[in-house]
Length: 123
Image (cartoon, rainbow, N blue to C red; front, side, top):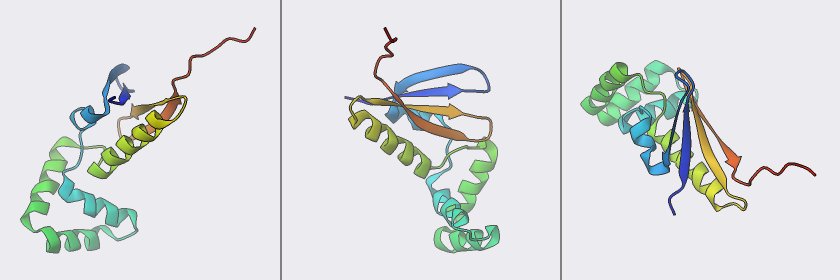
């Protein structure tokens, strides 16, 4: 079975529901060439050092990826997409199942699991 995800577009109030495999189509994401750059910065490496290291390793492909990212203003990386997919699989395997819900804010995306067990009113 394909796990389902709910994507809430908080700036517009819209909701998208579908298979987790569609996340790359719904969320603007950095080219994979920039994942290493983001990881380095997350580890505390300065912008300049991370840029130089990625240029040395990837060359012109890194420059092209930087230019593309400036045009689309992505909110997530390929690493984030993989993390969301893993979280969805983890929730889908639980009993009761948990559904991945993503909140797309204007400047970031956050994810959480919500129980699929029906709500029962007391009494």
